[in-house]
Image (tube, rainbow, N blue to C red):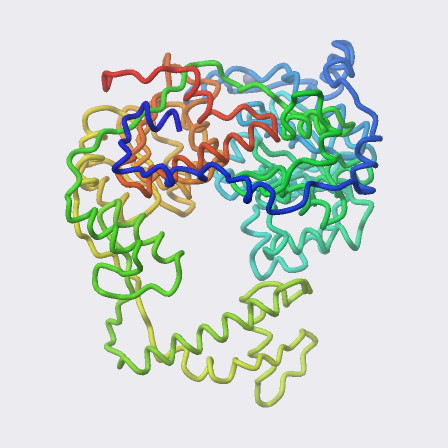
Length: 617
Ligand SMILES: [Zn+2]
């Protein structure tokens, strides 16, 4: 943890065992047997290696541009606010992705932020042979700026017909643009079946990393039924915690040519030697991917990137300095440390005993910001009723959880839809429609009581030291204050007299209109992905995430092409062991991403290249 040391985080606040995983002992390392040889490994070793840089000539790229360029560009780039340069040429990686996808009939694109993934996805249906109907999935946070981006690129390039758009040009493919959130919604249970795409394009494809999530289940089900569908999957961080995060995407994009194992148990096995924080096996047979002396993650990454159908970036899109340093917050009240310690021991400040470790960790994170969450019962339900309510709720949740495992069927593939199916099963007179019913055992008891107790979440404040400190930061310079909790964001914004942007479409639109002349407070969850916020160059991360991919996204909001400042600065609050540990875990996960994905991670770049600066600027 060199950065933590350099940042002056003292051992009394960060015991050596806290930031990131402790050094592994021999017993832990050899907890599992070394990775063995498998048919999958044999297949992957036999895949031809290809040098992407030598695959396409300048003439190939020019021919592609000529075919895609709009014949009569009419743009208002100069009068946009702020003005934008005309996108007249394709970036090298954009051209490579388009050429490679059309040649291979699918694409796995580990392409970092700021390399123009958006235009690549819009042009993809135009180059994919025989494409008639395509679906592009994007994060909901990108939707507010989608229309203007479509206009910006459409003025210079030949784009497909936009489904629902006002123009239809015969002979061009139709592109449906859908958010991942929409794919999660109940009415989207058969969405892909209704659209029937022959090409699916995923921007920020890590949104489909979890095969257990409803949205991923729907996506996988469609490919099972229609295996000839082409897949183009792009993401700057395919794997934030494990190669499991994208082995299924690689399989659907490249089939037998996938550089990741196809068999689930082999993916699991490789993870034991490759995944961060839980390396329990020696590389074993995976050494065959490596040059002498090469780390197994690097050998894996080199093999992957040399595979036909894989287009990867290895350099950061911006070489401007990025400086990350600790925010020296004012004195932390000793009482707060005591409450945090108590939380780790399993107790909330008001005496409530936690049931699981997860609750304790969440509470300690909240306390580090000066408050904690609890349920309150404004209607004054009796204690026994509340206990019964929680017991039945737990039983119901468990049955839903079990029912969703492994089985993915239309109208039964999310908790909300299962609830509806259970309602139908218990209707009187009996339900006679054509939708499925579910005879859940715990439903009658739960439905009888579920409305009888109505808890409301409530934030209880114990200290405003962090609110005051962040507000002071926001007042004394212009920048973005990033927070995890809305109630914290609102308090800081109020104290500093600046706007807070939380969740929702309106906030997403409004934040893009900020000119960068005043500070703002922003929700990490709602705004740290996808948005262009390079009008700001200073950041304060009040509640540091532990996810390396989340950090990469957050840093890329301001550390991106178009940044006018000489340097992008980030200050991080590390005043509690929970925040310091989260930051340490993020560094560890970023190292994993950098080694296996080959994407240089901003959080690591800042660490190794830039000395911390002293003045607060
Ligand atoms: Zn233009």
